[in-house]
Image (tube, rainbow, N blue to C red):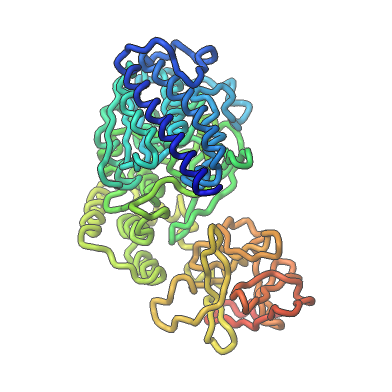
Length: 567
């Protein structure tokens, strides 16, 4: 789009927002009797929501109509808006805020299950940063419509310093929710504090018997809360989580993690385990973190979660670990479903970063707080020797003190919950380090867009070795880089990529061919061929390496299983 047309488009969008502001101001003051100048969905919209006043309903319809109108403007500059926060914005904004056809992949048996009435009062916590208004409103409404009135204690809404110049329409959220007929507490931070801080803040403010923590881009159906409540009431130390059904709106594709428990290794890399599918709740070492129910009493006993951690990431492992160590359990509940809108990049940021902040610090805080000193020292060494500040150590020592009263220790967790935690000790490693024959260049990784690609770079001959050169061949026949990604032969167009490790074999089986001195796939017919012009490895038939590519001879630095060198 030419610059002049882009300015015209943005000016038009700005004008509409100004008109919308004045309209909503009048609605808020209860002077306007028509729903919207841009069209209304009033005929198809429910009018008897227990939490919604007449004024709130008018304002919601006003916002909904203008979002639908604004989606047409976004369509004119699709590329700019769709890459803004990683969502298919024009499509999402056209959807009604209250939908009946929410995708649900729950087992069929769930439809006939009933649960005892619960007297537990629930504080709903939703935090957001630069969220799409349509997604945020859909999250708020769908949850309040699905939580029984007698169980709702309050809605706690936390704006983690959204950029209101970029997301101007989020300025209307506070005015809308304050018109609700249920207790609402709205907070807005002046500085972006990160997901962990925001959720911990919300839990500290909560007055309910339990807290329901949710992402701000989800939808649920009636009946999603009752299975969670039933588990938590059995044991107040339980963490209960629904199953995520994902919706990728660009391609209109759905998928779920049904039948998969979430584990992790000593670097807290996720490892999924298959479990029998069905309606019964199943135990899991950790959860994905975007939706969970836990009692306020238990949170108080274990000092909540995320102490000393920043940004987002690994609090979804820390809190479940506290539950396991302190006599509780962690469950995924297949009859409780959450539809999660999948973004092509994370909308949660920490400052200007769009990835988890201080990721290794968060990992080390969890491990030093909850695991053995020996393991923590090993992880610190392998991840580049990250140093924790005095403030982080205060948080770690506070967590250690809290856990002294728990009935289970690290050894119990390792034996009963997370056997993979020792997955990358020497006993599960065949070899470490991949380099050329002169040990001048080492196998490493390179981030290109959203991919992690295999490359060669000058070897780092110092300890701790550069994490990106930390290559291992495991007993599961994986070639891991930085212990967090595995060489994956399954991508199209002859590409080789370090993808998320899934421990399922198949396209992630990699072997060392001692005759060719090359890395090959599970069938032994594809080799890692090197393109020197791009400094990338690609996959090619081992017997047909075309011009421009080289079958670089590789060697293993430290071999623990000599069978790996046998042809």
